[in-house]
Amino acid sequence: MEENFNVHLGKKLRLRRLSLGLTQTKVAQAINVTFQQIQKYEKGTNGVSSNRLMQLSQFLKVPIIYFFEDFKEFKDVISNSDANDDLNYSFLSRTFASLSKLQKEKILQILNNTSKFEKVG
Image 1 (cartoon, rainbow, N blue to C red):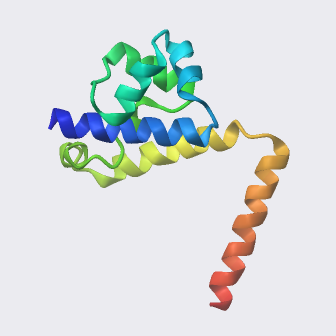
Image 2: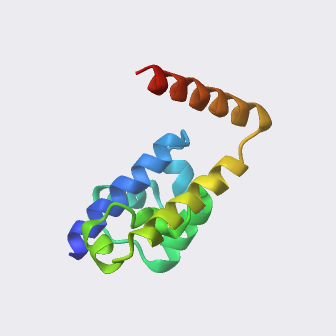
């Protein structure tokens, strides 16, 4: 399980880093490691300690639970699907709250347009 989780966590780390437009070097500097270490984390070669995971979570502005989402063994541990929904909602809510007014308006515009397509459907 540990090896699979390291690969999973690495993929989540890479996805978030790229979505923020950050380089491995920038992330490495933020948590005081080398960019090679970030490469090893992203490939799943090295595991991430709890302390580093907390640093990554804070720097990448995601809850620690982000790194566990979609991991099969983790889902098996949490049997109540409502708890997962709440965790995802919490993350989305905080992310949306951090956006500028213009960004929020654009997202709402997209959602409104999408709902109109579904009704016509």
